[in-house]
Length: 416
Image (cartoon, rainbow, N blue to C red):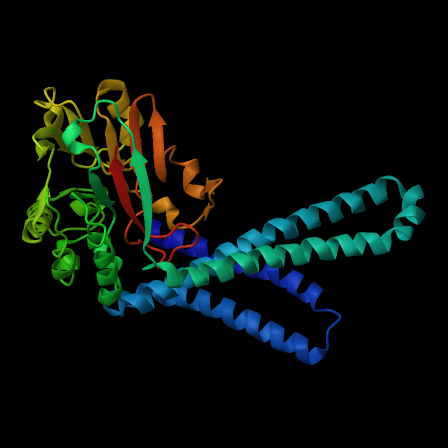
């Protein structure tokens, strides 16, 4: 009952938003021909009503049987339309507030009506500016949102050189490839995914590290991609850990045993691909006669809505003898919450999880994404004292089948 009530609230909000935006559409087209107005109105309401009707029918549609691409694009387009109208409405509301204040002042000080009339042309022009600006902002967002569909397999390499005084001589020049957040349940183009694997192999990494979220929910999502990701090989091996989505926590299971069996099958898939899954443990990496420790823990988040399966104390035990330590931990909030305060000799931590929200702006001078309002470390390199954290932007995608500004990432880290 609660879910249905929430669903109806969403539909009512969408309808109110459509009616509010339509008032601006009418105002902006008031000076055009009747034929133009009819065409604009018909287009606007065809799109808006189609979205609402789809949401009304959604409880009766078995969308799980639909082609993955079709389902993802429909949901993403409806969400994009809603957000675009919401952004535009911010500017419409500013103009309505301005006009409301002007009206109140005209009632409070009627002696100034003459002055108001003299400035009427300026007032109308400013109103038109805000309305058109709102349309521009909303339209730009929607266009970017739709364009982002084409970026979901547009893999980009981020190269980082990290310098450490305590790095053993044998590991100087070591090359690490990090990938994260494959989310195989969202993938629909095996050939495009394979090209990303080719790009990884071309880096000739010494070791490949995967930092969690191989699937969205269930192990069967990987069945069509085992052969693709199984191609990943490196001289020192391919190592992996689990993310919050890998446990099946977001699915209603028939029993606890079914959920446990799903996780065991997923662990088996890591092994089938030749990946060494680290479950709250560590291994020694040896190169040129030297050794360093690689730790991998299960998902551990400082945020309440995500699980704390990781046991850092288990993974760390026995690593004291190694001069250099790398930690794989899916959620970057782990770094500030536990790693830095308690484990000051973890030299490099690798995380993923945020995807950079798959939406934002990145230039050589700055980066921004709404996800930074939730995560202090959300993409790229962070340093505190001698400790470093790198947050991968994700190989795959979840929910929104695209990327705007924050592209899918293959990280190449060179230790010097």
